[in-house]
Image (tube, rainbow, N blue to C red; front, side):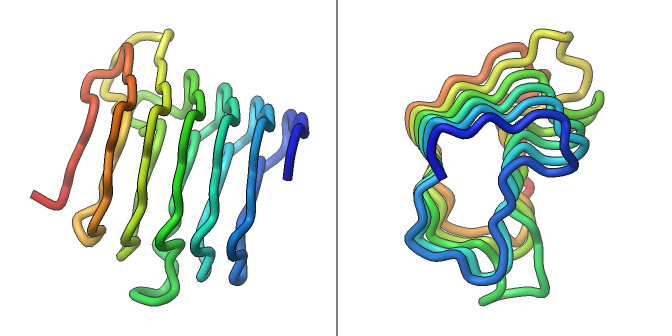
Length: 150
């Protein structure tokens, strides 16, 4: 999925039912009702790179909880994306839920220009594991990383 413009829908890019070794690159996703990019049901080993997500209703990028281990979007790389002004007052730009494991977030830029409120850059759920945050920039959030695993 390359070079698409997605505006005003329910979910921008929706990975589901075993998407593997896919590339989502240089897409522009704006004004979605829920997530700009949503990854879940056995969606593994994908590269999500160089996308711009603006004004998502709930989260810019979400990894869904699914039904437990083995069903989540594991072993994905999220690199060089820009997420701007997403969700409500207690939302996360990137929300990793459930038992998701083996994610790499590298050189992403998360920005909040509407005021910090209780917003967070990265929210890592209590049952997530092996999440790498490398060289990301978070600006304007009340909390840069809300790590529930601790």
